[in-house]
Length: 360
Image (cartoon, rainbow, N blue to C red; front, side, top):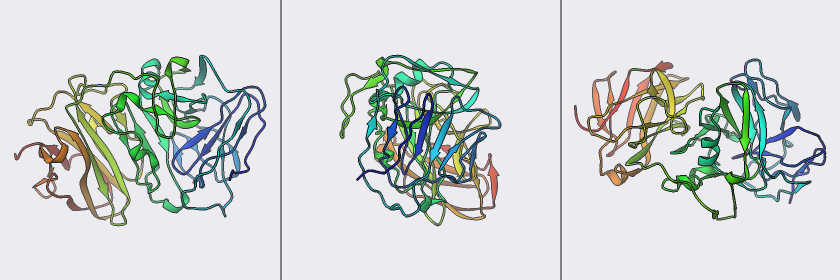
C-alpha cells in the first residue's frame, strides 16, 4: 500500500515529517513524486529557533530568526490514517541526485536532508562540513504521543532518543558501530550552521543500504573507554535522555561532532559545558575522580525518576558504579544498583545534581 502524496515542483525541498523519521525528496528538474513510508505525522504548533510547524496540509515554513535555505514544506497526512506503526512502499520518480551537492544555509538552525538514493555516512558528513556544529537533530513526534520530547540528537559518539514509543532509531544507531552509522535515504534533519554558508554532500559520503545495512567501507571510530545513557522519567512514562562518554580524544570544552547541545525546551535532563546544556557529552580519559554537573528542566511539579538506560565499555553490566549526588536532599545514590526518585518543583535547575564515580 502506498500513500497518495505527490508533488511536481522545481528547485524546492519537500519534507515529510513522519512517525519516526522525516523524508526529503531527492531528484532533479520538476518531476518529483514522493509516496511516504510511514503512517503518522505531527505538525504541532512548536518552534525550534524560529522554525515553526503549522497545522496545515502543505505549508511553507518561514523563520523569524534562522531562515531556511530553500522553500521547504511539511506535509500532513489525513486524520483517519492509522496511528499504529505501518510499513508502506515508498516510490520516488525522477532523476536521482549524484555527485557533489551544495545546499545554502543561513546562520542558525537549518532543515536539510540526505539528497541521495543511498545512505550518507554520519562521520563523513560531519567531518566534511566545517560550518556546522556537528550535531544532527531529528524531529520525532506522533499525534498519539504529544507529551514526548520533540527532538532526538545524534553526534559521532551517541544517539539520544526522545520518549516517542515508535522511535525506530533506538536500535538503529548501535553503540560499538558508530563509524558505520549512516543517514538513511531521504532522511530529513536539522543542523546548526555557524555562519551563512553551504552544506556539502559528496559521493564519498555515500553508502549502500539494505534492510539489514551493510557498508562499502567505514570510518575510524573514536576510541571510547565507556559510555552511558541516563533517562529522567515522568510518572506517565515520558522521559528525557542524555549520554556521557569518555575518550582521550575528547576535552572538557565543546568538541565538534562529539558534544551535542540540547534543543528540547520544556522537559530535559542534560550535562553542562561552560553553563550550556548538552544532550551528549564526551569527556577526557576516564578517572573515578571525575565529576559531571547535570541540569534539568521540568514543566510540572511532581516526582521524577533518573535511571541508567544502558551502558557500554567500563560502565557495562555495573563494572563501574555511577552515583548521583543530590545537593537538594544531601543524598548520594548508586544508580548502578537502582533508579533514583526525587521531587521537584517546576523550573530549570543547574546545580542540584552531579554524577560521581565513587562515594564522596
